[in-house]
Image 1: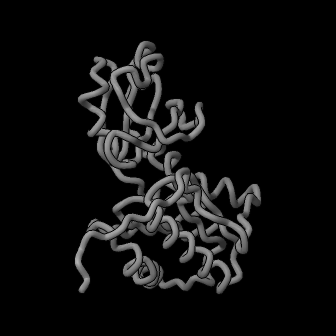
Image 2: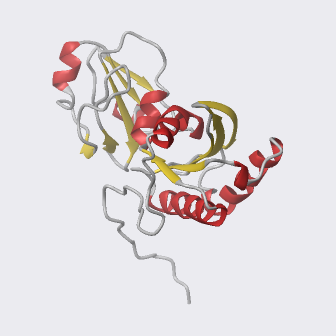
Image 3: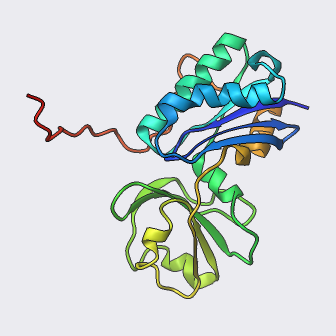
Length: 225
């Protein structure tokens, strides 16, 4: 039975959880947007203190690897690597879209399509089976009326994530169903346990988030002086 500390900073929400034997036993969520840089470490301490634990008591650290927010992913991965290195524990990672697929509500879905907002009508997405198996590569996709036409022709499709609702006007099929949601650390529990048991550990020195797209810096228009 592994005790694993789980961190997700991939979207506007921040969440930290603890799992035992593949089941989440505690979770803390910060719903205030974009607080990853200032609140990730305090939230880790808070959840460990609530269970009377220290980082050294955990068997591994698991972090959401992306895709998602560039800054959020960097904060999460940096924090997880620091905790793992300091405590001498292995590092695990789980894909953000896998997390959303795991959070899908029960239903007679033919497919589950997690969607992470990538601005305008673009989302990070992939197609999953109802059992949570990834069927297509992760991609940054601009959504239009013809998107996912093949999947929608086959039966009910659940679009889930913080990018789902903005696609509702474009995906008008009666088979299209939408749930706005954000990935939560607790949904990594089963995948993290499996990775731990299979010893699929990340390299602490070289592991990087899965950004999918290059970061593009913008020039501020504010007059500084």
